[in-house]
Amino acid sequence: MSATANPSTTGTSTDDLSKEERLKRYLLDRAEDGEMYFKGKFISQDVDLSPKEIGALMLKLRDSATELTVEKWSYTGATTWRVEPA
Image (tube, one colour):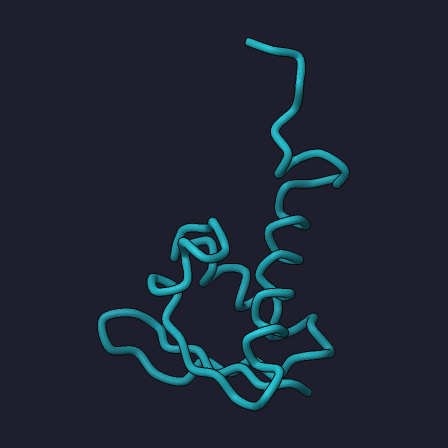
């Protein structure tokens, strides 16, 4: 195994912080022009996170992201989230 670190974990104190920041930036970019609705399973490849990780991070972002309004919208097979700029 090489001595180089995984790029996704370098430069941050925890891996969760980088994942949360990555998701927040993605959502800010996508919701720039207004509200957006999505299911975690449909954006998981875009942000390189599992749908389960996205769900957990969305709950955190709902409470902590001042730049976004995050709302758990509905559940049909998976949670649909509504996001808009604050």
